[in-house]
Image (cartoon, rainbow, N blue to C red; front, side, top):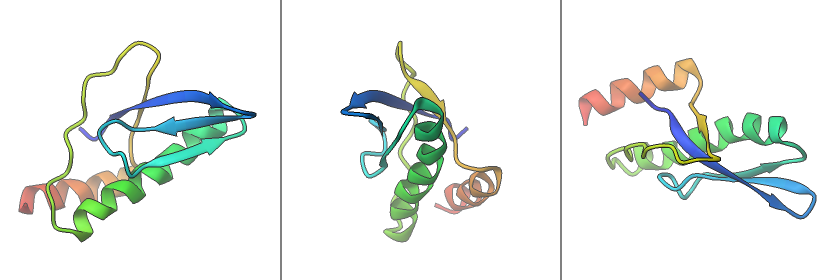
Length: 87
């Protein structure tokens, strides 16, 4: 339900991760595994800005070639589900 496509791109020696649907969520890692691990935290933080501002959560777009899906943790997904149901 909360699976957002992430774009990974080389940024010098690091891998940059961005989310088209949640532009507030930006992170990086030394390699793809670290970048995707950091992406979970960045996505959760980015989505929390919408909750704090009492705005609707952005809908995930369809994944494109070369992108990876990233989801918040199970607990965060449960919280976001409750928030979305109340919104």
